[in-house]
Length: 538
Image 1 (cartoon, helix red, strand yellow):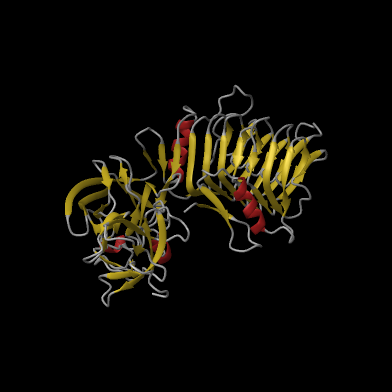
Image 2 (cartoon, helix red, strand yellow):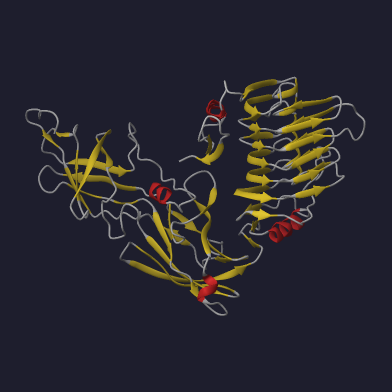
């Protein structure tokens, strides 16, 4: 075992059986140990790694260690064990699966197994029984229904929408082999979209008639029939890989959007986003969650909410991009504040990317919002390419921001400030035109290669054109021609230009350190010279 045995003590070696691994790349649903090399074993509050020694058919295994636990007496002991193993940690890791499980590696990373609080005796087999900590969802090959042929089903894609992956926000999960996904235990609500099928330009969604309790160690199998008018669910079963019961359900055709139980919109297409916008202009608290990327080419857009005064009718709801992208948003408006949103007060916009927006306004202009007012939050929002043109207050993300801006970025956005009214003073920034307010901050943001221009007398900064008194801009970075992070600074600023001495890797580390410990996202970069992207914490 690598060291002499203490007198009167015997090393603990465990045999294992009954494991039900579900990751196809390392184990089949026949339940074997192929691909699992190390598990954590916990005894009396102390954890040690044990090596997995599988049998020839991988059906069972023996766990051994060069530094094993020892029997101190003949009394039974309580043992817990789990995989994946994290070096040095005595805590079983929380179940956080990958949103994109289409690759073998990400699917592999989404599996969690454990044997918890099991009694082991000195004599006998000393076996540990492992089980899954995830639920497995399987969508069988789609069946052609009324008005549909098998050939027409070719190329259909499947996703699980609005599900928990164990981190901060609900997500869209892309399954392995377009059919298999692992999820943390959770309840899928009745009459909420769950399985999305995209076929050509048409979207269908399956909504269970009754709530489904996804339990750890259980497999849920759905056979979906695609009709020209919608989906029908048949033989949707959940079982413990060999036992269980069946449920049935119906699904419906979704062309543009769906409604959640709280009345908020779940949007699939440009037409669906416009439908939400029409209602949001009447009810500025109306929530929206994107269920897919959306191309707004050729569509007219009126900014949601007004940011002209602190009493103006601004947006107060929650807009969740859910990691999706709105492309080719085009706005030309003489309104006081323009952007996807004109004004936001007490609302939240998050998890959204704008790609190639073309926005032109008269005064306050930003890609996401013209004016982000007090008690509002914008996080994990990004603008890539395109152009933003405004008057006195113009930024790639926001024209001005009194609310909180965190973990946002712009990349190669042309931002131009024009002195339409002849004030001789204005602010142009790669994130915000002007950061106002005395208690709220802008932090953990970056602008990569912004293209910034302003009229005579305008203040220009890679992050912000101006920063108000007693306001902090913290851990913000930029690259490109801009000489300063802030044009006119009355507050505090920390950050640097990425220029070879300061790398995107060091910027990434500093931006992560500035984020709250409970923030569910973190910056990551593939190389010191590559701008980071925001990813879910595992």
